[in-house]
Length: 113
Length: 118
Image 1 (cartoon, rainbow over the protein chains, first blue to last red):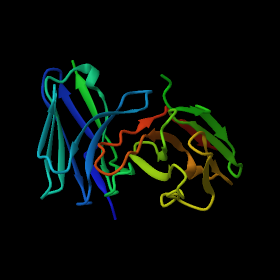
Image 2 (image 1 turned 30 degrees about the vertical axis):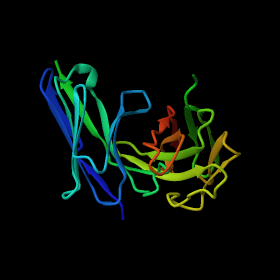
Image 3 (image 1 turned 30 degrees about the horizontal axis):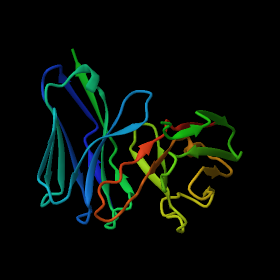
């Protein structure tokens, strides 16, 4: 069945780069997403990548997709304390792209000043 | 504009009781999703509504769980005879769910209902 795996915890110092990794199993995914959950808040879409792309850059965020290895990563440059949150990787498992997603367990990013 | 709202924000109940959780999606969003998030775990898909189509109930963990949605508006998730393992945050999301190559289907999440079963 479908499965999305992430490492559970990452700690970095302010100003460093953070790399959060994710592996998924469904090769028919159309889009892959990164959601951010801040303490006491709901999940918000952070960025996404279409499955026929290898890389997407959006300001401090870089998403890399390796379809062969089914590996997705999120790089945050110049990490700030405000980036401390839980980051969820998600894949759309419905090839008709109707929105059904499978989420990973979430990676807690701790940014130390 | 208003986002997705859920009520109650917190619910404490005794084992064996029934509970009903409510979700108000963003107006105009045809798709609505329910997820469960257990402590320290990821989101577990429960059920998906899209317009007037039959819901995708493939994620419901047991027949104690059911959900309804009236048209493209409010949805209620009902858990009958609650068990301690039902304790979790229940999240609702809605999206335009355009489908196909129309672009991404960004899901907008509500703040969740924290359910505690004693």
